[in-house]
Amino acid sequence: MITLSIVIFYIGLSVLGISRIQAKGQKKDLLPFVVLIAWCAYLSLGNVYGWPFTSTFSPILGLFVSAGRHLEQWMGGPPNE
Image (cartoon, rainbow, N blue to C red; front, side, top):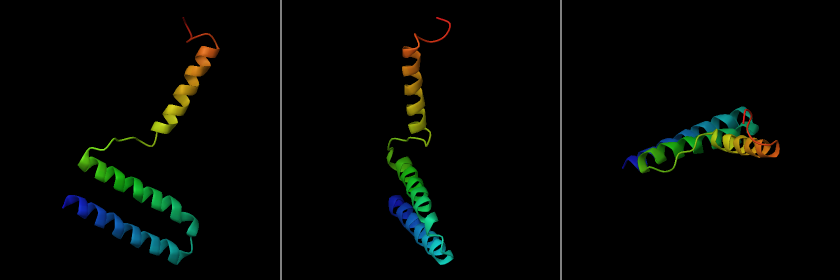
C-alpha cells in the first residue's frame, strides 16, 4: 500500500511539473526535472525496500579517488613516506 502511494505521488508530481514546464515553453528544463523526480522516487522506494543507496557524490568520489591513487603510484607513493 505504501509503495502504491509513493508511486502515485511521484506520478502526480511529474504530470503537474511537466505540464507547467511545457506551458511556459521551457522544454530544456524537462530533462533535469524528470531526472530529479526519478531520483527522488528511487530514494523514497529504496528507503521502503532497503535498496542500495548511493549519493550524487559517489560517482565523483569514485573518479577522483581512483585518479588520485593512480597519481600517487605514478609519483612514487603518498607524501611523507
